[in-house]
Length: 307
Ligand SMILES: C[S@@+](CC[C@H](N)C(=O)[O-])C[C@H]1O[C@@H](n2cnc3c(N)ncnc32)[C@H](O)[C@@H]1O
Image (cartoon, rainbow, N blue to C red):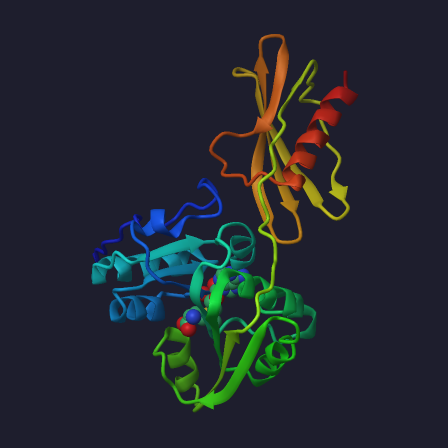
């Protein structure tokens, strides 16, 4: 049996953390901070953190599998200047990363989503470039490396009004990541490199948590309870409700989709004296947003409609 050591210490549980993060507190020192978007298995992040012990490094990755591999490499290298955030880079940039706090942001071989109807998933449209600009210090850099010529042209076409000057070139293999090796093995000999230097600040406001209002309702009937889905600027889908009659607790599984953030979580309707308490289930790591509040409102309305 193969045994791997993996410390969870570098993992920042950003949903439960005070937002935006405070790098001095996170790393216990003041140093230039670099951020990688889509770190994959962490090859580049770990190599760069080893080369630059005087800097601090943050990696964001959507998939737990990649994060696990990166944690293993960080532990193996004994690094203390690296942290990892699991999740979609977009809400993390909007809500978690402090303004004008990064010396460098980079993304190596981001998914190019080649099919036209998938373009909406692409990272680095004009708005996201403005968002990245707002996180960089003056003179900071965004570096992008891709294997995909059409995606490269698409990003180049998004640079207008983003406060960056651009340096573009074709580049030889240089970063030695899993995906660079994959494309080399498939016969690709050069890649496309874009360096954007911040010359003007884009003021993009941080998205902040809202104060969450939870409710008490007089009546609740689990047999007839059916909150209505919402399809407006915010999409809310109530997926299922389970009820435990012994403990008098109902749990409703909800998906809330807002422009930057999709959240899957449970709302709880729990008996308290002669009333029912409606609130996000403790421990489900929900980020308090307008959409979550709308879901709570819809559950309250569904309870009261049966009264
Ligand atoms: C093609 S892989 C490249 C991985 C690595 N940079 C390399 O060079 O081997 C793209 C990575 O970006 C991650 N990713 C895709 N969309 C993301 C998002 N919205 N936020 C964070 N990571 C994302 C994927 O899970 C995947 O690990």
